[in-house]
Length: 97
Image (cartoon, rainbow, N blue to C red; front, top):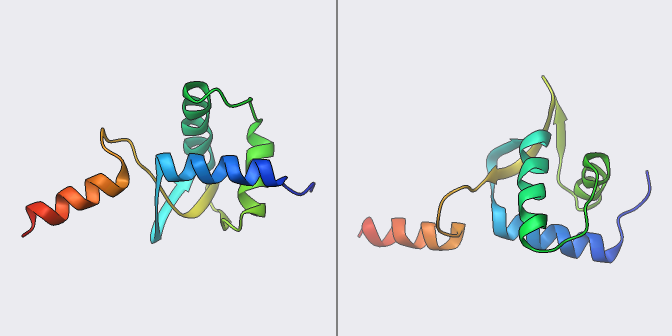
């Protein structure tokens, strides 16, 4: 397994911050992450990365993977709402007051 480059790790960080929430009880399939990545990279003019290479980058970034009925990455939940995860949480907190 070739190590991820600093540029790839930085790109992954931008992608995950934009598209995923993190938490101990979250998990996302490899296919879900790759599909979200493809959409994100097209919108952000990022060079294509194969699913296999994205898997390597995720592992190099320390995202744990579980193989059970497919590949799952632990600690990630795809965010598909209209607001960013931070704004969504802030809005939920505001409404809960």
